[in-house]
Length: 214
Picture 1 (cartoon, rainbow, N blue to C red):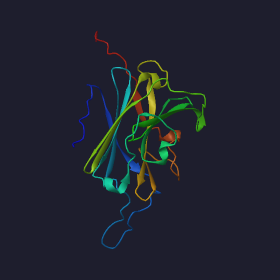
Picture 2: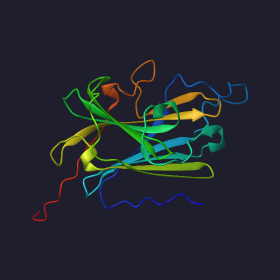
Picture 3: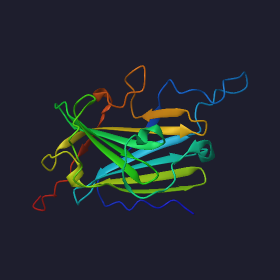
Picture 4: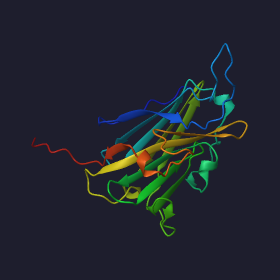
């Protein structure tokens, strides 16, 4: 089986590499002949873009990785579920610049997902319920694995078209031994903390119809 080719519209995309938190436990300590081996993951790339239908699309790809050394949740019936971060899952955080509130999205290789809304850092709106479900696709082949999550506009923060959202991209990767690795575009604390607003370092502009008069 080969990994699916991304079916992307002709829109601007952003691709960036994630890196593990410095507290990641080495799999093999350094020796005189070789550096320490810190992770079965060779490379973790993330791509995001705004789609013409108003959705936001996020792709995560593990490359040059020893997938047999990782625990990847098996496919199951799609639907919402809590505590996906206790296993391998991919995460997106988004908020409006200057506003304390933000939204958290969890995407599991199993097809399960979660969406949480926060008033401020870790102050969750318990009565929030997502108005629409994301669509998740996952595939793996050899030393690579790929997850695409398409978040419909109804599940995004209610903002005018063309609004720039601050984005944090992250992942929890579980090794076979149960150890968790925490990956993000930027780590800003001594301990892994995806909720830290200073780690929302990317910008994604929500879709706006182009002006054909220009």
